[in-house]
Image 1 (cartoon, one colour):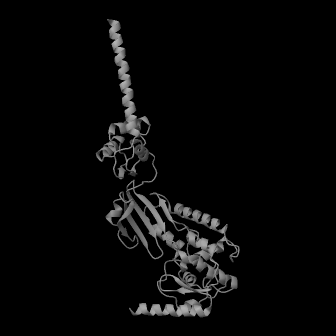
Image 2: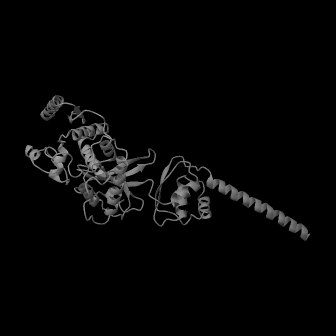
Image 3: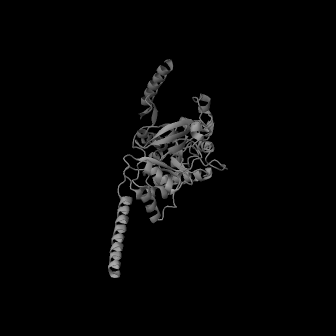
Length: 384
């Protein structure tokens, strides 16, 4: 009788073990298989939130089939205590394992709110935007000039949130003084700037920053990037470029940057200045004269006077020979590359053509005709 009972007990134990093994295997498959999320979603994880609360949130939104399996899987992979605060973009069909990985690996938030501090040639702008998970594009929520406007609630309410992302966007052609002023207006950054960086040495680009980063650290990153871009471009310069060193390339690139905003014109504009340098002609470019007046501290806001064109300054290229002593702005990569590899042309003049671009000329007669056409366009616009 006891043997019979023992045999039955052993059989039940074996069956139970197989059942448990089956349940475990089923749970593993559930944890690793494609999830029920039909459309990608933005999951916000608050600071101090638990894996249980996150699993409940995911289950409520139909992103996972079982909060229990989700938590057990996180525990089994030793990630239940590694939850990171932030906003995480969960792709459609993500498995529970995928989601656990997303919410525990850390780094910058991948969705939610982004604050962009834009430093432009003529203005500063702080922009608050949210990611639309359907289109995967950011939608503007608010924008304001931090030097002129009071910060709106849409900004102050998200500025200190743990999942808000911050970005400094620097336009091509801004001066180092303008960049420093823009960083001062970015109130998520810390620290003072002891000295304005050298003109031309800050790479225009978009830089992701964190709350508490110092302004000096951001400037150092910009300088390191510009040094790399310049060195790379100088290493592939054309043989006939009339530049003695990479610093002269940076100077010429800054002039090209200020003369045209059209990508397709940069190498043509650069060719004009290269041709003039090769022929011993003065560059005669207005942006350098303007820099001599403003010293890069803001914009002139008016046309140049004849007296200013005749005034002797180190930056007046109507008077001095060759290049000015320093860059006149911070050029982007494309202008640097144009300066060291200009188009091969015979152009030595150019003037605005009324379309946002320029008319180029090989002779003074051609140039005078282009100037006459431009003045006609200006007169028509002023009369409207």
